[in-house]
Length: 219
Ligand code: DX5
Ligand code: ZN
Image 1 (cartoon, protein in one colour):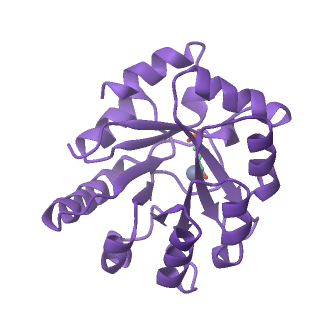
Image 2: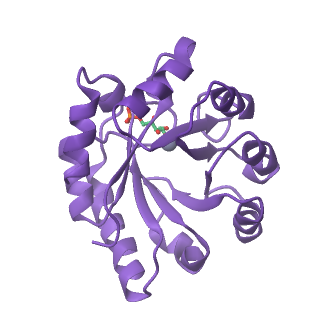
């Protein structure tokens, strides 16, 4: 395996009246990443956070690596504000029409890592030509919009396909999964090549978050 497992607790599944405390709970459980789901009500049928939320978390002393997942029709318009607000990584979807390559380059120019995301209905071939330009590929294992949905096992072949390209081309990007991930589904994704695991409901619903984090680190 190229990379050891990383978990990225998803703030979407936490108490939104206490986001800083929720971020601290992730830190205390031993997580080093925090997943931030940004939705505009167009690309995904929900509304969540904006750059000010990230900036506020930074001001509150949260040091986690901010893994920012932009589910936006026009993500290229929001790269600067998220980078300035404290994002460490910004992932953009392949589905909307905009300059994907230029936007990935801009994310890196601003000092962040960059990633590409594919929805369940989007074939891996849509991102194949851009794999050399990214630090991470995110394979959605649910349709974006809401936490707590059932894991899409039919995404496992897509993970294997991307992992095979990664090995054949000696690329080093991380392979992340998002949606319905827990210890059991995470292990299935790990076996298919994933190394980075977004955990929303399974993490914030767990009574022993540190035990979940330790279990997933051993996958
Ligand atoms: C779905 C979001 C996910 C979500 C995952 O649109 O991108 O990050 O928070 O939540 P769970 O882990 O509950 O499926
Ligand atoms: Zn996400």
